[in-house]
Length: 167
Image 1 (cartoon, rainbow, N blue to C red):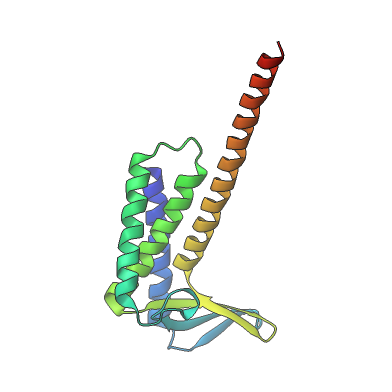
Image 2 (cartoon, helix red, strand yellow):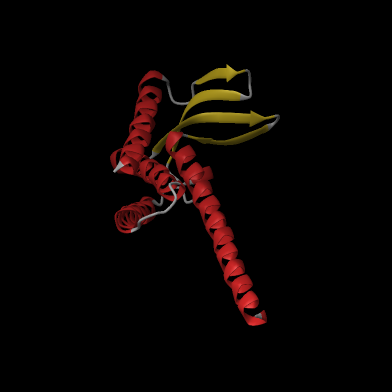
């Protein structure tokens, strides 16, 4: 149940920050936070990350519903030995629902975090996007850790079989 609380907190922070940006800043307005490196701005995105698949709302609805149902099913069904995977799934769940709500209500997502690296501007994003990316990264990390521990189990089993074979 704590993982649904994490997802709820992510969702509330995401929606709260988007509300502040949408109601307090004009579209395109910018507030420098760290010179030209980090800027809070008011931007809208009808696509996915980096603006890809712009205007494909039905695609996003379907994918998000499938992802959310899959995560909820897995979190209810699986008994994770480690806490990393359910935490990662909670981050993805909260972020996915946050962006889904934006798309359902407004047909677009409010983005506001802008980073410049010299002349390159990283695509503008929001809290939900950040949590989804962090969650996916943690899922990959959990998978790698699981594979590593699986290899150790196989090595121990093979080592034991070799010892028994030599006796």
